[in-house]
Image (cartoon, rainbow, N blue to C red):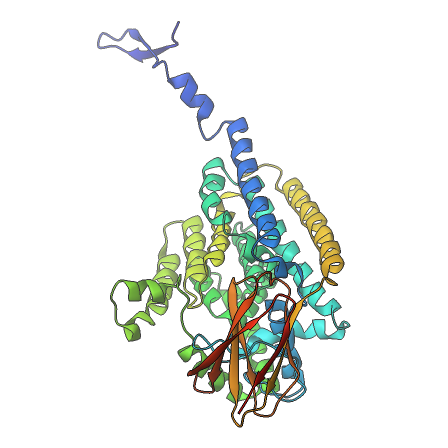
Length: 459
């Protein structure tokens, strides 16, 4: 028999009307059903794990080896070494660590980030060679895995379900060692510090603000989170953000010089936007290229402004973080996985948060330990290599598809130079090579066999 609901009749007596037959089923399937919540959370975790594992066993096995030439970890470390050696940041000098500094016409510099990106890497330089890359990479992996697991096991069912599409592309972002993972950590720390006014000490808020200041100095786009702080009227935190950011910039100017920042502006203006960036989307909509390059900045201003006046604290943080993620000119599909950080405002209501945090930390530690063992164990695998001998009278650029044809890098070879060696741990097929002159005009092609080889460029 269907359940009955009592309602008031016109004569003042209670009337009994049958409850819809589907109501009990809908209640069982509702977002407050514990079994449904657990199932959705487990599904989201499974998608995240599958994406991470399939990435390093499929197209990007190189990401398991942070000492690979051309990896983000390798490039950050090389930039830090040039910084302390008083060498130019945006071109290589004799004795510098080799990096893929040319990928014409997309970019022609050894690193595309501001000079400040090398500052967080400076403490790692005290470690022995090889260990420094592993330490940065392992810390990044632990931060990303710990945060994502914590968010997924604490989020409401609808939040975990909404995160699944971006988790499908989370594999590369998990392993890459890119500074984006640390920015995600700084954002979550900021929300935690400002989600309550009674349980978080002023010292913890200061730490969160200092971390955001470092992130803004390194990447610029996290400045959108200032809109969230403005909405909270967190004036002390805003002051600390400014001070910490200026300290990082000042140290960069002291070590690299003002000319490095001028050089970076030129690189930023000439680096091609990625196909998934807002700039590329604007160009696809027939917006002139000059105007399309301004679209990320326009979205940044709008998103930050909306975050500053949003009606709720949760909406303000989510809008600000989404703006941080999408407004970079070099936006890749994997970067969209960082949008999982928008779940943070909706996990603070979950019970036993301290227990969930401990579980996430333990899981991240276990994953990182296994990954370190796998990285060291596979580090001695055979690689393909290329020795380039430029016997011509002019400088050339050799460009090659790399990382299992998932990306493309290049090296600049001055006239009369020999012994430039390329290592590609993910090469599984014969790779085509493309040779350009210094103005990026094509000169010819060659083939690098699976076993590696040499290339002689005659005059």
